[in-house]
Length: 123
View 1 (cartoon, helix red, strand yellow):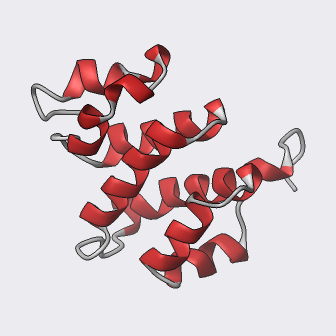
View 2 (cartoon, one colour):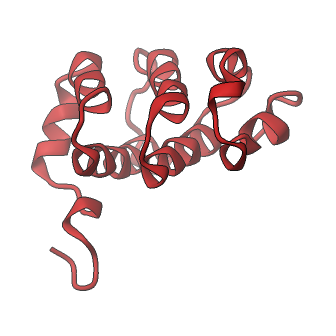
């Protein structure tokens, strides 16, 4: 563990294996009850989605975008919601149809993606 960081915020080989396992593995974690596992996976996805690392995202892009929208809508942990929202803003483009259709289920403080990006389709 990195000094000063909670173990829930440091990813490792398990998160790499989850992503390498594909969408079903990612979905299982994001829909699970372990908030720490979700945090670690989302932090790893932040690295994985970064264009610097040149990962092929063609088959993951739309399904992952849908999953992240679902996390923002349904998650109870604010920090997990916030990280999912960050990934949407940083690595995807509008439209966010699932998010928009369920906007009333999203707490006010997490609606910024809707206000800032939905109309322009820009990050």
